[in-house]
Length: 154
Image 1 (cartoon, rainbow, N blue to C red):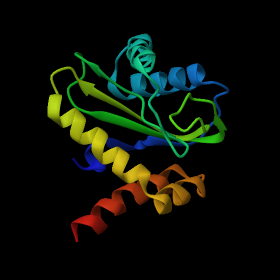
Image 2 (tube, helix red, strand yellow):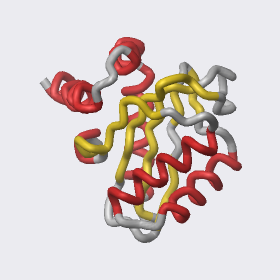
Image 3 (cartoon, rainbow, N blue to C red):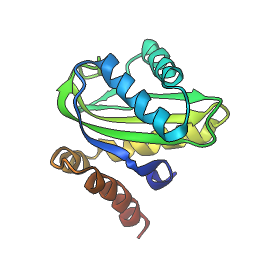
Image 4 (cartoon, rainbow, N blue to C red):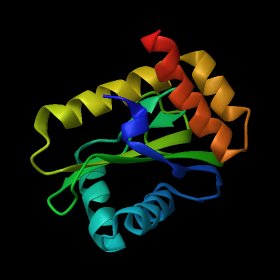
């Protein structure tokens, strides 16, 4: 599962400024709604329900909120780099500053898991995280993510 098939060029936000986890999820839901034409509240509710099961803060300043929606045609993602880290109830109890929201069709099964795995692998790499944290340009972050795929394919 390639990130370029999940995240559009305009699906990267380099300077989000939420003050809380809830506000972050609302902003991600709004961005997702604009991209896939769904109701913002529907997306927010799915993300919030998933967070109630356990935080999607995976550690090292990274969170991967995700959920499934019957109304979307394909797996879709948004990456946000936060201007300042926020509390997210992450596994390592550290604040989060890099967030990848993943939305998938309800029947996506293995593809949803493959996408989650791919995102987690990319965002576990310290060099990649450092590069994302050191740029405030959304296009550069998108290019970084897609160039990682090209380098891995070579």
